[in-house]
Image (tube, rainbow, N blue to C red; front, side):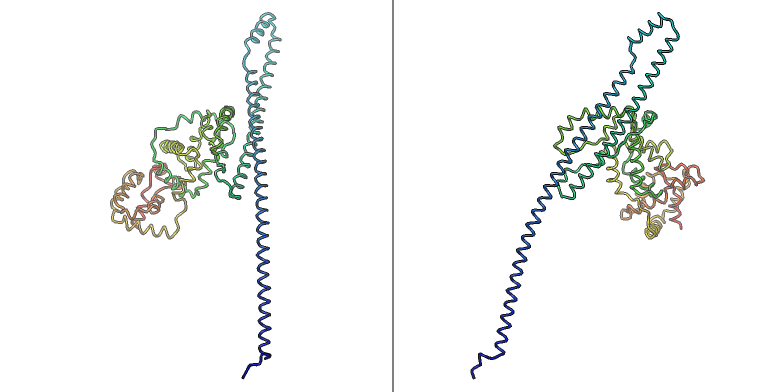
Length: 433
């Protein structure tokens, strides 16, 4: 039997197919329109991005020009101040011709009254010159500090913009190299302190780094606190009576040289300049701060710390950079309870059979053992697999006394425990308990 082409069912299916096809075509057109709009938006975003980049470059160029003018103004102020001070110094120098005239007047007139008048005038003049000179110095220091802060702020913002905009990182300036110095009153005792530095004292830098981190651990000083304490004040406590003029001369003399080297985008550290200033010894000041922080009063310890600071200064002129980089290798964090329990058990396991030998050592030198002797025992009794850094550091932590522990100690020898010496008693107790 032949199907009826006018079947209602077939007609419905045809209509549904037509509707689906129309919906499909409509969706397809929407996709085309969306893609077109998306491309247009991308073009708009690219154009806006290029406009922002050009605006930023223009602003940066204007800022560089403004900063260049600020630096030129600072240099002009420095030169002007130096010339004013030189003129004042010339005025203060004795004038032979004037002295001869005054002497002739005194002899011819033989007048005490006139002589007193001249002396009073000279005294007033001298006081005025001194006061004016001090005023100029203060004004110079204030302007120099202000310009210095402006320079730091400028390069800080510039570095941030370079990082934010993914620009050339070679243009980033090391802020630390220009940041850590200021002008303060001169310490007249600095010259005498310089003579006490023991340049020939040999020190192992790794050992002192390790022991300083150990002392920080005993006193509960974080690494950042230790670095800030010994450097921030030490870098600022420097003389300025002669230092300011010498620093000005150094800047002026090196101006042409620095301009010639501008293309390498590297900034020279200001610290070597200050090291050449008479009356300023940064290394000695830092050594004193370390000794004061840990209560080191023994001359041998003081000489060791001074030599240590001198040695690491040869490695890196920027001591903050040196400490940040190298002290990360050592532990400053206190030991957790589970670490203490594990290491206590390990001490008994590794050294229990040597308790009699350690007891014999207690009879020598009032229970004190040197750093060298301690490591000789470790090499003798400890297997290589057991020479874990934290384990050895934990043992030294037991044997090193803090400032308060030394103060409360009844044995006089332990009260003055040196940096390279340890108290055996706490270590021995861990072995026998």
